Length: 384
Image 1 (cartoon, rainbow, N blue to C red):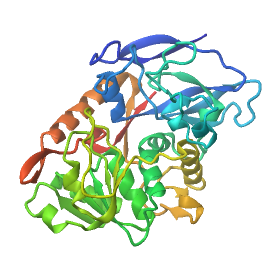
Image 2 (tube, rainbow, N blue to C red):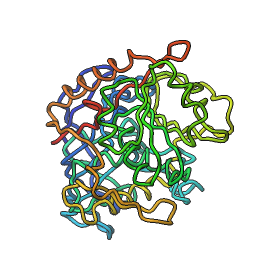
Image 3 (cartoon, rainbow, N blue to C red):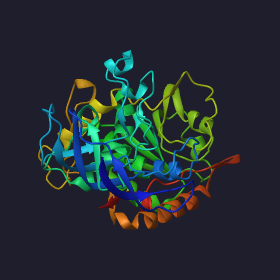
Image 4 (cartoon, rainbow, N blue to C red):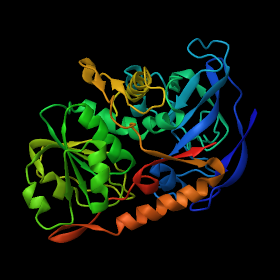
């Protein structure tokens, strides 16, 4: 077994503390990754606080992992020591069901194995990226180009693919109008990706403070949801809405902003189950079709000729055309922290979440508004 150090929540809502644990030995098809960066996703906070239920402790969070391959198994052909590699939200599945065979491992009939807070076939708790190293089967690892910034790549492994995949799945592109609800870690990526696809983008936010950021990220329009008349003005205006909000709110108010047969895409994950959406035919799911393949496609193409991760991504939505974010600011807006400061980053992130959740959509009655996913609204990196 491989002795590993990390930071863990020992019980629900406990502060992250230094924690030593064991990783499995490198198997024939495994690689050992020395972790250099791991993104802080709001899922990490929900999980460490057991807000969704089912959390397993002790828990080392983190599923936006980037590092360097230190060792490879005897039968590994796709990686070698010194290569850059990444690990996303899950690390195994049954590999034999129809979903797995189709490249839809996240819909595995037996359940995908989460990167952390899961149990492998031997009953061991999986532990995530707030740690020094991780062992993973190459089938669930991603190649990270050497030219791509590690800090810029990490958020692509959750926030990036969570927004890119449904936009691609639903065919969002030129001549469409898209509303992005919430301008945090997910929201700001949705804006940049949608604009790269040629979409007309409107950011819906409760905060006037986000207007400048929305414009800098490329949004065409910005609307304050708490202002009287906003929802009336935008009624039946959008072809698509991507909702990144993680607090309870009224989905039906958003549905009224859709054209007939418009699509509401839900990628936020509130603590309580979402109510059934009424009035329209196509409430959209997160659409994470072929998640691993799409993540690898995005990460690989972004790094082709962008050493610092400053100019963006190249990808092929629906296999038809290349999308370029060149000459735009870096795809992910990030801040970096030392791993030992992970709990401080959590506290700051939780504080902004709660502050944002105190505001409301105002549409005749008051609705819970969006929490932000990240320090100062951005994806936050814990740097080892």
